[in-house]
Length: 241
Image (tube, rainbow, N blue to C red; front, side, top):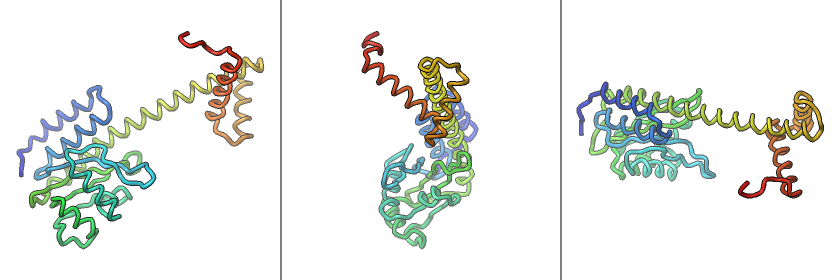
């Protein structure tokens, strides 16, 4: 069913929500809901990310209803479909008239049985890699109109900004953790060998090179060994201290 569009106010609300101190999943759900509300005739929207488990099934990170879960399961069962294609590197893909679809016929048959009439899948690209797929679906014999691709591309760009920011925060946290671990290891080596900081760093670097192990892993091993030795000798911190 067609809905009146107030794109400016809708986008203003979305951008305001993106600036609020919420976690990434809340922001993604807000963007998915905005895609559904902005695009005419769209009944369901969702964001699907590549799976990281053994069978590689993609996962729905955000969705406006259970239909997306059924469609992703259908793609996994049949081994074909637009989400798999887009996550695999294909450009935006649209699927209409499912009953007579010649591409992905097994998936199209299951999607048609689930009530899907038209589907648009747009890649979400972060740092030149496809990080997710934005999926817009129409049911009730509705076919997505000419405005839908532009709206989907816009929302996909906003999703990419959110995912990119989240990735940078994770990388920063990892870098800070690594820096802290290396600093602890340096202090332990300096104390144990009675050497200065530059000599201790050179010592860790040699250990890394000769063992073909990353410096952060060498440092983590030294910190872990020091903690185990302290607990064994009874010199570590006592509980509650």
